[in-house]
Length: 177
View 1 (tube, rainbow, N blue to C red):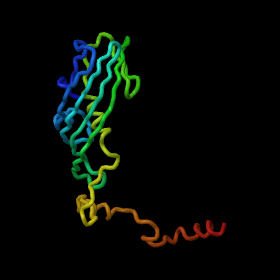
View 2 (tube, rainbow, N blue to C red; view 1 turned 135 degrees about the vertical axis):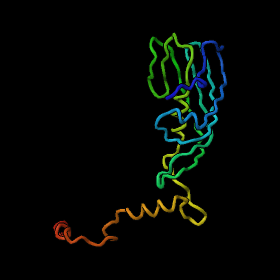
View 3 (cartoon, helix red, strand yellow; view 1 turned 180 degrees about the horizontal axis):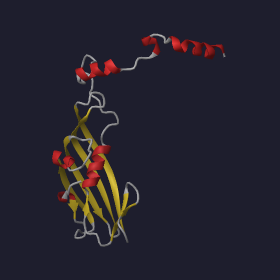
View 4 (cartoon, rainbow, N blue to C red; view 1 turned 90 degrees about the vertical axis):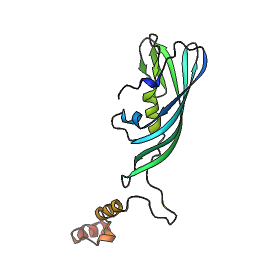
């Protein structure tokens, strides 16, 4: 990951209470992370930091659209995402991540870079299946050439292919038992 200094929140100088931060994520942001599933996109991220005397409570709200590869045809697919998450920050001797929602920062820390969290939450906001929808006639909007190629290499089940005589004797043994 390249440096994303614009996503740093300097919390040491903030008063106790809620503070709002707005981050606009674009293609350049996703390019800074190696191996991102998101090819491009624009996401508006609202971060609400609630500073308490002994901890920070951070709410993330992401909303926007991103482009990913379709699971079927691999063509670009635009998906709208909206995702909310919460992060708790405690203070301790050493900086460590305790769970996905709780991190411990050293007392010496004075700022928090939220770029990695925005990146992870934007991916968590993606649907499990990422495929093109169907048109009004019920036909897939996937790349037609790729669908033809996939159909060409599709392994057919036994009824479609016809019986393989080499297996007939084995099937008879199973059926007789």
